[in-house]
Length: 129
Image (cartoon, rainbow, N blue to C red; front, side, top):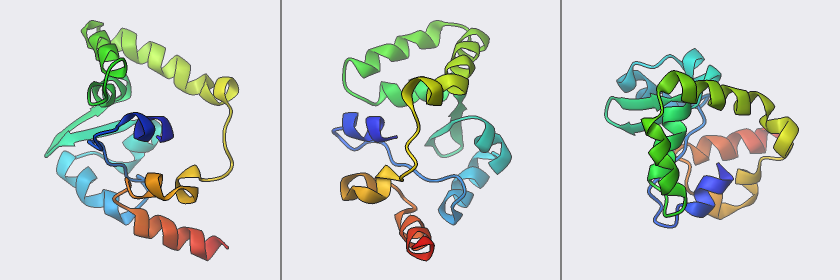
């Protein structure tokens, strides 16, 4: 998320924690169950238009400037093959890149303002202090 926010200079992409109340109307309009989203990354591109897995990741990249948007060319690869690679990377990402215990979004206002559920995030953070 942080990498996408930094690369998205034109602020085209907004974010939302799937567990938040703010996510409910978006999931409902797309007909997506919360459980599905917890298993696989979802990108809601428009009213009723959503993508999951590798397609979601590549569609996000298509909104970013070059060189990131060039990676969306991988959409020509058949979805099952792309998703197999995506799942392989997803299962190992914390081993390869590490995992932060702190919520970096709450520490940087530039990141926080990109979340449509920022008020809920801040409330949860205050109640955890």
